[in-house]
Image: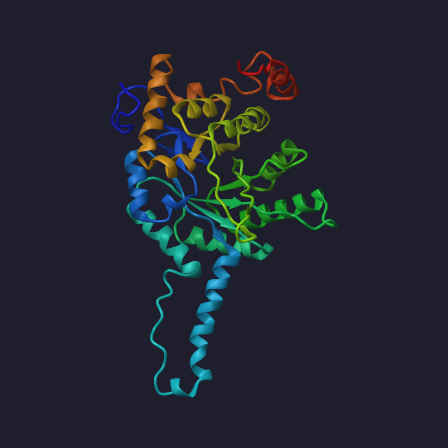
Length: 345
């Protein structure tokens, strides 16, 4: 058996898992990224071994700007006399605004046999519920709330901000019946407390962690430029720490690791600390859909060599309640890491 064997047909350990109550064929899913923008590319991901796909986020400000542009265009004819006898041609709006996201959900559901998870990022309280409802009604198997925001208001304290986020979770939970995941950043003073309250507010799962993409400076043009920096395996360590801690504190909640999953070993590590699934994006952009086959096949081979029969047997075997010293996931790990560093010679 090799790491590139077909993940759907190879004999060996049972890779089936459950995430958000969804039955999955394996523990590796594609998180929101450009490869989940088209049905064609998602079919390639499914063929390569992806157990589910998360569609690109519906950003409220983006879709509303597109819809306003359409409205302005359709309203333009009444302002110009020359259009009175020659109305504007019909405009195809299927690739704009909410229609674009609705169509992608429907087409993905029709073409794929794996679960399709839709992602929402709102700007106003009512927007989260509205767009989550639209995507759930379009057929999404689950909704992921992408709580990506940067608070720059010096008068808005952390408690108020967290209360607003919890209100969003509650409002969406009240209008959709499909499973609900919440994608968090690591910037919480008390992440365990917020995670517990998020579950109480209606979250079925937590996705750890969102990657904040900071701007860069163009020194030639003196402009602030957006720039995407792909993740590395080193980023997975923070995810593993918190998944190990939260798995012991919230045993029934779904947990997904995102940011830093690049190798089969990364997949194994996320499962061992208690994750239900490992989410992949940067590795897909770097190496293409075939990386899914590599990750799934490699994880299966690793488990087979060590006589693990299933993902269920492996999951959580190194969470904070399963290791001899739980402090290794907390402050003690930091202290030991600092003390153990030596310069390369």
